[in-house]
Length: 245
Image (cartoon, rainbow, N blue to C red):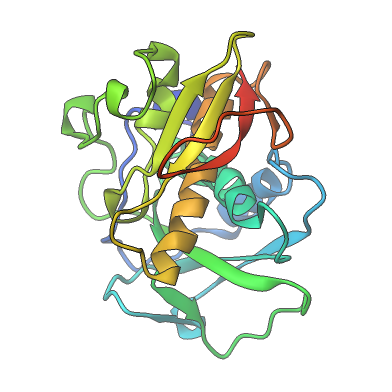
């Protein structure tokens, strides 16, 4: 049975990517609880079909030599905003796992092996490893390596701190926020001076969803997201949407 250690909001400021696990699988009740949580997560785009599966190491292929007893495979229709949607959904899952004493880590350089997705209209997007961690699960806030708030926003705003502590591919922290007169925010993705390879560009779009998930978890009653609001086009940045908190 999972024992709550902290709420999801607190986990934002304590979580870390866990890469070492013991090989003892989680019990079926814990996995059923995880599935129930996933099935009830908030989505960023309700018009996109997505799915997931939890498999063992025999069903994955990875470049990194990380080993865990469980692998969470994520699939989605390839539609506008689908990468951000997956990041948004499953960062809630990352926080759920870590808030309940279970280690987790996003894995970009991996793919299913010997596995057939029962939803052929959905593409594999990315995976997450999870299980009982070896070593410390949590970290102190001083151990985070993150850009200062003025590097990710057009003004200092402590309300954006949850996004600042979000994980990202290779710690690229590709998000940038601007403020609107009505109190809402725009979120942009930074373009790189040296063109990213296609995989990193894909992961950075997932990262935007991850950062937005932190904003939602910190403001669950007021968070709303839209891609249709008027916005300013910024140099070297891609508009990803607007949100209120």
